[in-house]
Amino acid sequence: MSRTFPTPAIRRKLSSARYAYQLRGVDPSRSPSENFAGCTDGQWLWANTAGARNSARLRGSLPTLPNPGLQRSTTGADGDATLREGYRFYRLVKQSADARHPGGFKACRDVVDFGCGWGRMARFFLKDVAPERLVGLDCVPAMVEAATATNRWSVFEAIGPLPPAPVEAASVDLIYAYSVFSHLSEEAHAKWLAEFRRILRPGGVAVLTTRARSFFADCERLRLEGAQDAPGRTAADAFGDASRWRPRYDAGEFCHASIGLSGALDDSFYGETAIPESYVRRVWSQWFDVMDWVDDRSRCAQAVAVLRRPDQ
Image 1 (cartoon, helix red, strand yellow):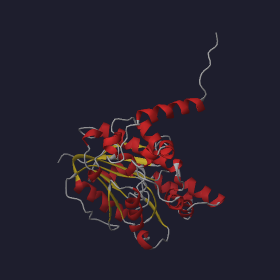
Image 2 (cartoon, helix red, strand yellow):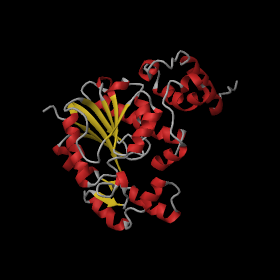
Image 3 (spheres, one colour):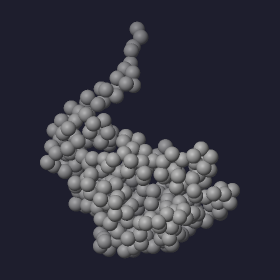
Image 4 (cartoon, one colour):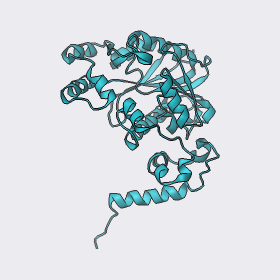
C-alpha cells in the first residue's frame, strides 16, 4: 500500500502551528531570555520571522526591524533574507563557543556584539544572554540609534573607530564581530585585536569574520553586472585588479583596499579587507590561540576565525 507524505508546504504549516502552540505562553512584559530560553533554535528563528508577522504577542516580545532601506544599505537584503543570514552566524558562534570556551556557550554570561550595526545579530543572542549582559558597540551613531530604537532590552553604545572600548579589562566571555574585520585596515584591525585580548577573560572566545579569497571574484562580477545595493556598489569599487590581489592573498598577505568613504567610516581605517588563514595563524597568534578557521559558505557568508584568549 502506498503512503502519502506531507508536501514541504504542509510540513511548514504543521511546524508553524506546533511552534505557535508551544510559544503561546510568551509574555511581552518579560525579557526574551525569560520567554524563549526553553525553545529550540529552529523555533527561535520562526518566532523572529513568520511568528512575529502573525502574532501580536510575539511581535511585542521581540525587537522590531528598522526600515527596509536601512537594512538593505548595510546588509544588501531585508526582512527574512537578512535575518536568516544573521541566524546562520548566530548558530556558528554558539557552536564555536560550545567547542572552544572552557565552559561552553552556556558559560558565556557577558557578550559583546562588536560592530553591531542596527542589531541584526544581537536580537538572536537575546534568547541565550541576559539583556543587561549583551552589549552592542558600533562607531556609526546612526546604527546605534537604530539598534536602540528597535531593541528595548540590549545595551548599545557608540564608540570611536579605534580603541579603547568602554569595557572593563577581563570582563567578557564572548566577542563576536560579523563583517567588521572584513573592512578594517591592517593597523586598525591589530589595535582592536589587542583590545579584545584586554577585555576578554582568560579562556574567552572571539568569533570574527573576514572576506574570503572568493571575494575578489565577487568584486569582479559586481563590476561587470552592476551592483544594485549599497554594499554591492562599495564592493564593486574594491580590488580592481584581482590578478594582482590573488597572489598576495595566496602568499599570506593582509589585503585591504581603501574605497574613499568619509564620515564615520572614512578610508583612514575602513575599506574592503580579505585576510588569509595563513596570516591569521601567523599574526593573530601574538594575541590569541587560533582555534578554528571556517571557510564554508553553507555555514557563513564570510570566512570565520575562532580565537581563544590564553589563560595567561
